[in-house]
Image 1 (cartoon, rainbow over the protein chains, first blue to last red):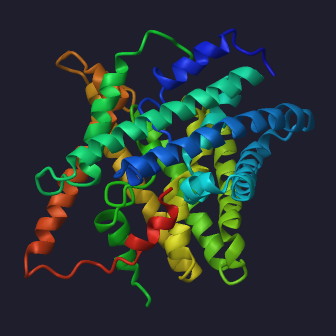
Image 2 (cartoon, rainbow over the protein chains, first blue to last red; image 1 turned 180 degrees about the horizontal axis):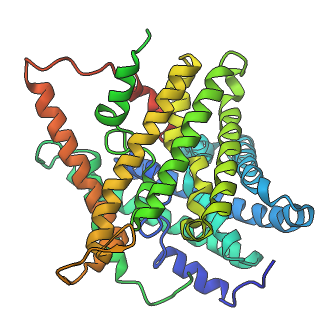
Length: 199
Length: 221
């Protein structure tokens, strides 16, 4: 394993929220972003769950990669191992929440199964491996990416709620206008570029 | 109900195109389409994975317990994605580098899961394979259209060849994320307006049976 890049974890944290936002510049997690953004409360709940799972998977997958995959030369199986870790973790978090935090479980529980197949989670892991982050860099990268995703989906859902009764040309309703809004948001986020660079 | 081969092809390439009609598999179709060669490799990789995972899962459909089917599906898909990943690394190392994590992310591509859940579970292996194959080809077609527009306007090149004969200034915005969102929005808009107009006409033939639409919800994550 090469040395980790010499970037402060805090810079990675800010950069992954603003300049390399998961959705708006890496397009990860777009499917649920479009499908679950018609209502602010739901969208925000999904964003919170994604953030939580993303931090945990990045931490665990970093340890797994460093202490299991690299020593045993299992690089070819890395994808399978990562996806199993994510699926297992989601299941465990779901059960633990149900047992210890029932209130939170009622609010967020329905989103958890959706998260296993959210590409942003696996994407964060793969980015962390490709960029050789160390443990704290990976953790804060996961946290920042999750918060960035949450910010983007909440903003989109808030805009869509306001637009719900707007009359639109035929065919533009639904996904098409959602993509236009997302494009405008991405355009706005380009304004942040240049402040931090991590890729 | 058995669908004819023709209906499967028409549905996947046109009326229920996975990307522009079902809005699935968007992540990779936007991320890799600023360069045409990358899009083609990605499209072929996804087509291969979808066809073979649909075939495998359909052949195994009576043996997989319902409760654990999601994880079985994911593992079968992951096996094929690893094959694709190794093949791309071996034969096109530059493209593999440019695609970065997006090849691995085929595992969580909603199209494959969607086809497995909505189609391969209820249909015989051969039809499922065709369904997966043409779902993948529909995805590839959309990718090629998007990447042609983006590469020609953004870099002035076509598959890396310089086609900018007028020496017109290139539009950098085309290779940046916002343009991808705008272009896919326009494609969805045009196609759905067209199909709505067609289905409004009384003389038009009834639209192809679309069992996939509601059932795809399982893979929409």
